[in-house]
Length: 308
Image (tube, rainbow, N blue to C red; front, side, top):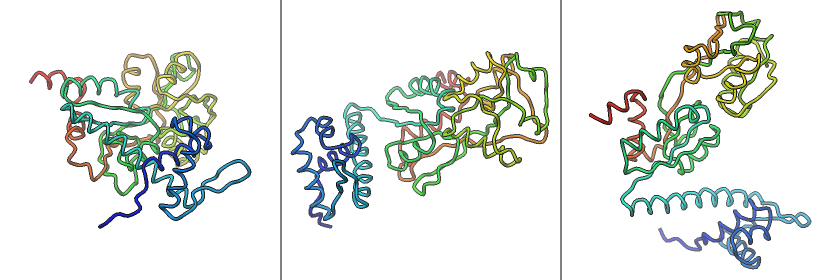
């Protein structure tokens, strides 16, 4: 197949900069080129595709419907180009790269140990890690700029392969000063009467919790505080008389040592699965295989695994 009238990658960069920086002037500053050059690149891109990318509303520019499609394609292609350049640089130095992303709860609890252990087992691999919200990670994984993702909900994109990693449960807990700190079990009705500190609405944990509560007829609880990390919530529980639902893997040691108190709910448990996700066209990626294999080894067994 012969490719004709291929777009210039600088045109994609100009389009992206105009959209994300909010106009031609800030785009020219971000790319360190003159304003006429930005305009020329946009016009060349419009000529290449045969469509108008922007329409004017007073002094502002708005993407056309066609412009939205070209912009999304430009973002994906530029991200893949940046990832390719970095991978090639690492390859030229005899290294291999793993681009790893995970949801906030999982990363906050596991990431530091994973990075240390993986580096000790595979010193030739370089890991780029990032934490985020599940939907954002799924989008980046689908665009091919993430190799492996560890998530609290399975992605639904057709290009992504998911496998079960770990079973988890959300526990209802309180601090030692809470009135329920000496109570082992409550009824479902008493859930409604509590005051809670919970994860933020966009988090996978909160979505799972809200869905579970709705399944037993509780549309919402009295959430007086929201926090962006599980560790912050634990610290709040230790200082205030609030309740929370948090992952078992975060709470188990804290409950066993008596720092927080678990309260069971009669006839109600919130079970969930944690997932490993990767692109179907990256199943022969050696660093990804090595990392997924490491996940099957308990963290307290890593040391013996290394010395064998």
